[in-house]
Image (cartoon, rainbow over all chains, first blue to last red; front, side):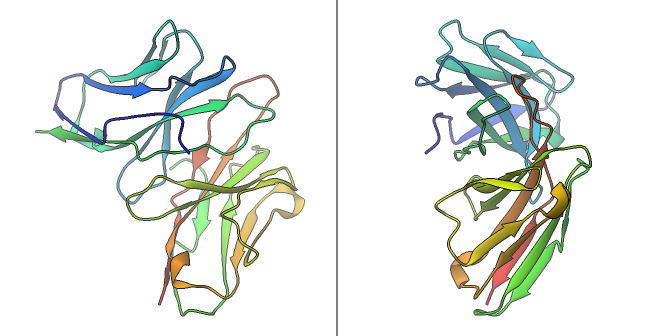
Length: 112
Length: 116
């Protein structure tokens, strides 16, 4: 079973920041938080991941709380092409890691 | 385009027939994963390879399913005696795993299987 909890759906206006929450209260000390998204009829796309510190790349920012029990994915200026299902996943780093455990994700709808 | 390709993109087959899917990962990636996704659900892990070795199989991978990765390059997933419940999107992903480092998986576009 997925070790994360996400709202099933969210709306955001085009051009605004989209903030997607995720709870992972049972995360272990050596587990990372990964975010992927899946646009309709396509394979999942990696967005970002982090362990303890906040992370930023060209797609998004990841804010992890100090106790690591929750995180927020931020899309700074959402566009219509950001409409997708966003998955928050907890998993180990490379080496002994196995497959990702996806939940149902958050269906983010960007409104024009 | 992530660089991971899957063929065919769509497959329609009759119940009881065998089907085989192919995945070509990003060339330097040492790990290859197979997932299955049914409508409205997130992808479910099936199995993965480290180079040519199959290291883990999910309990979802029944005896009718077999996967190979000869020479650690492309991989095939075969389903024997297909059932209607096998209808799903089959996704392949690859990654470059270095011990001690975190990594991401790159997914292909998937093969959609319909069993009639």
